[in-house]
Structures are given as structure tokens and as C-alpha cells.
Image (cartoon, rainbow, N blue to C red; front, side, top):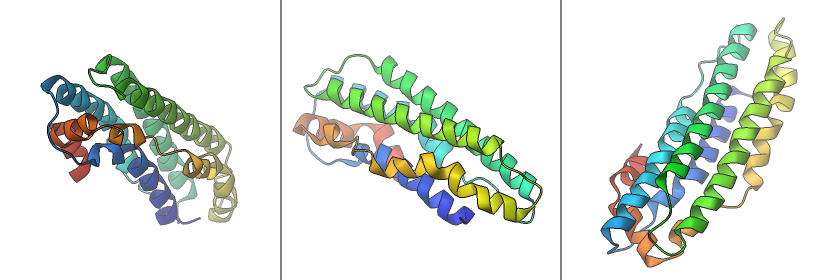
Length: 179
């Protein structure tokens, strides 16, 4: 599996998680906007880590595994930071918000577990040759490939007009859209 294909898979995971902050609408109370902004801000650690493409050089198998391990570990850690940020956002001031955060937290937890599992699998890869690394990579990324089967965690943010409107007005949601 090429590093480009691996990065694309990680990018799809990121898009799945942050798409909810791209919803449209009008209106929304200040409390809802502030809370939604906190929710989108909580996603920033994961968004930043997941979008940082690991520097892999197929000619350096040990370096490639090391860089991929750093990426997997930092992304798994960033997911934990995002989950803590969602908890810190507190109760939603708008109907449907708490359910959305619960689903998002569940999805992020699965994403984090997948990255951690891939990191553990990577630690056992024989780095003596590029061929051995290439042979092992499909098993390493298998937990990440399962992420495509997760339900869209962003449906809840689009479930009410007030949530949609709050996401449109929340500065950190806008930053996630353009970042």
C-alpha cells in the first residue's frame, strides 16, 4: 500500500469527523453558537494531527515505520484530547446537541482505538527491508480500513435548524471547514 493511499484513508477519516461543522442554516442563539464552537474546537486536535501527513521514504523502511508510528501515536493521542474537549463543552443548550456529542464521542473513541491498534501492529513490523514493510502494511492498517464502515457521526449536528445555524456562526467550525 502506498503512502499516498494510506494518507488518503486518514484524510477520509478526518473528513467524516469534521463534516458536521460544515452544515448550513440561519439564526441560532448565542448559547448554541458558543457551545457548537466549543464542540468544533474540541475537534481541532484530531483534525490537526490527522491531516499531518507522515514523512515516509520507501527507501528507508525503518524510518518509514518510525514516522508512521509517530503519526499513528500522535493521532491516537489527539483523539483523546478531542474527546476530553467534547466533555469540557458541557451540556448542550439546544435540543439534539447532547445526542450528537454522544455519537461523536463514540465515533472518536473507535477512531482512536483503530489508530492505537494500528500503532501496536506497526511496532511488530520487520524493518529489515522495504519488501517486509510493504508486506506487513496491509495488516497494520486493517483497523483503520474498518473506519469507513462507521456511521456518519455528523448527522446530529444537522438534525435541527438551531444546530445547523450555530455551526454556521461558530468561528471554530468555520476554521475546521477551511483548514
